[in-house]
Image 1 (cartoon, protein in one colour):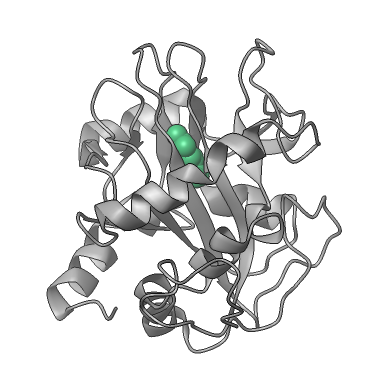
Image 2 (cartoon, protein in one colour; image 1 turned 120 degrees about the vertical axis):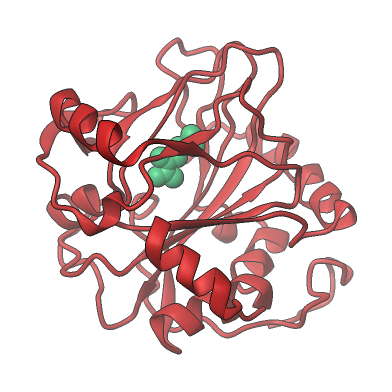
Amino acid sequence: MRLTDDQLRRLDEDGFLVLPGVFTPQEVKLLRAEVPAMLLEQRPENPREASGRAVRNILSLHRRNELYRRLVRHPRMLQAAWQLLGPQVYAQQVKINLKTGFDGGGFEWHTDFATHHHRDGVPEPLALNFHIHLDEVSEFNGPLMFVPGSHKREVPLQRSVDGQKWELWTVPHDAVTELVNELGMASAKGPPGTLLIFGDKLLHVSAANVSPWSRWIFSVIYNPCSNPATREVPEMAHERDRRPLQALSDDCLLQPLSAATA
Ligand SMILES: O=C(O)CCC(=O)C(=O)O
């Protein structure tokens, strides 16, 4: 899938792009059906919420599950990533953020590049985060919220640790206040199958999910092969396979799971 000139302009100006209907209800149903079995696995790639009750993320699932291995190579994402980043990209991090109803915690104000740079040693803010809504994402179940245009500003950072005890660089609230007062806020809502693309320097946040409805979002971060991590971090935080991804066919998610498609 190639982005139109208008979509490219909006992504450049706002730092994010919300595209409903990129993945079909049938594809989303297949992707969702793979989740319960992975959720039951007791492994470090399934870290829990601080409360300990619910799984917070399912990480590295493209190395654990054939359908998600295909999804990372899906042309509806990969061709857009190539258009924006050039023809050689690798999957830097792959996960589902589950934000389970009532139990799913939020994410503090941050830019992804701050952590990619200071923790992983990624040189340039080039990576792009591609999200697919596996649930309806509404104002009620903790959508991502952005400061449009903030990717063109330099923001101060503070080092903290997240619920998984990983290093995380967040943005002090007085700096957030200044930017929000000037640039406003927007949220990424949409039905299952919506694709959200946003850049490494965009300031964003999301609140805890206080609704009964879970908010499963799939995320793959594509980074140019020429801009890799230079520090060792856990593989689920930054994948070690930095070879360029090849696209599969557009119907790759619909092919029988026993068939080899790569
Ligand atoms: O899943 C969320 O609510 C936040 C995710 C996020 O901040 C990110 O992908 O960088």
